[in-house]
Image (cartoon, rainbow, N blue to C red; front, side, top):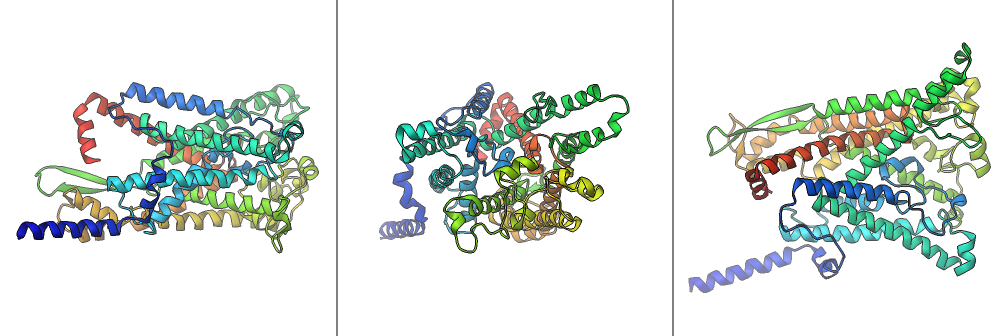
Length: 540
């Protein structure tokens, strides 16, 4: 009888577990058929991991230089021109969408899982597999969703291709290349994650930002057609020092080198600002509060739980960049897209966002994707000191120094004020939201510490006690870190960055490089001491 009762209880428990399984398990047959990179069933040596890492990095740069076949480059409009460094993409190439679909898919899955809409326990191996498989499906959907609007209004096929195969097949050729390129990037990210070190997405962001900063600093090619003035900061400075007669630097050349009145964005001020942001972020990454811990059973075993000043990392500004990119994208679609511009109330409405015509953009020296009025303008990032310092100090040069458009000083102040406020407030709330939905809040961290058999010396071994101690620090540091990263990103945009890397891009690259360096250190340590690798495997 006891054996029969036990078996019935086990059956009941199994039935309840099946009933509690997430609805995402219905997608498992489809998930199993999605092509993916297999994880190694053995230990991958450090040298091989570095080889895979470098190989994917080289392949990434190759893809940024392979242009889409049949594309009419002359009529191409880049929806994400201001966010290229962050999206790790290149206009008109196989990397046109960059990491956008992957990041968007990841954010959607994390938000839905954190909000308990998808009931998954990521500590459970089976649930984690379903989560990762569903994320792949979401990424594939986002690739299609982001590719489709591009081929109708912004990435136009060439006349020769249209005449050869017709308009619809020609657009499908562009569409298929976008999808293929984005999916290859997704597989490259998996290769780095499973066979290399760190994350492929982080690697590509850092590579894109580093490339922008390097070319913005040392590029000797002319910045504009018909001129011989180099676009890079260093060669441009040397050029002005060599070409300008003695005494002539005071009559405009200093302003050009500092602010880039006629040849932005690579200026001495932007280079100084970029270096300053690197140093400030590197210093802030090392600042932390350490909570002392002791093992409940192993006497003498002690440790510390670090709470970094940058506790939420760069996540708030990534999410804010996604919000700003979407505002800019939809405003541009409603202004210029053949179908969406006809929408009642929003179509071609300057209050939502107005953009220059091709003639105006060429005359004013700005891109067609730069908003000049409406909500999109006030929420757009300030592209360096050229856009706000000069119009405030020298109103007479405002038509040249401020995108060719004469604006009253109150409008300049309003743009700067709205943008900075938007970044600070948005980053603060995103930091709070992100911590609570990713198990980094006081309650979740207390449970993690308790599950590892650790406790705070001098306190009872109770997760509620640990939670109360953590509540003194984590909520305050979370809000402060969100405000700080928002302030750093906005400040870098106000000063300007070389190569149009953007303040957010510089922030991301510094954090990624520090994390990559730490990951390499851990890999080398485990390579030298195999028992540590076994220990980490058992703990993970």
